[in-house]
Amino acid sequence: MGIFDILSEAKIMDWLKRKEEPDYQPPPKVEKTELGESAESYMLGDIKALIKEAYEATDETERHKILAKANNLEIQLSASFEMAGYNLLAKRTQETIREYKKEVSKSLSKKNSD
Image (cartoon, rainbow, N blue to C red; front, side, top):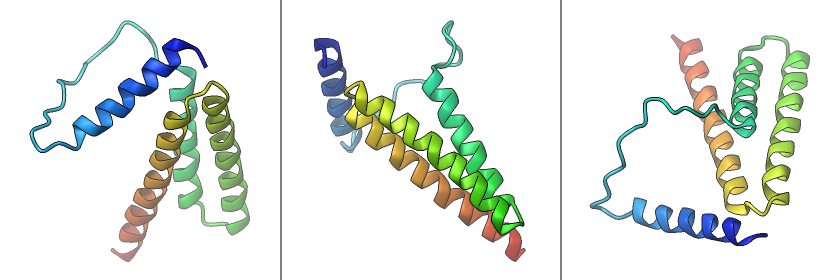
């Protein structure tokens, strides 16, 4: 892992600590940047789309196939972060996906009960 990677991880850890402080104010949202999204961002979007599609599927076999695809992409994404030495980012990505699964499951069960 290079010096840039070590500094990046340290900055992320520092930000996570500051974010938990009571007087923390988030920076203003950036409306648009000139750079496109990273490949990892697209992959995360694809994972989320597959998860939502799987939870909406009525056929159990189809649901398992879609979730298997999402799981494979999640493994690839986490592995790419870990191989690059971004262990904290890999962990946060896994937490984001886990939270998204709960959110989608909850919203669909709420929709089905209505």
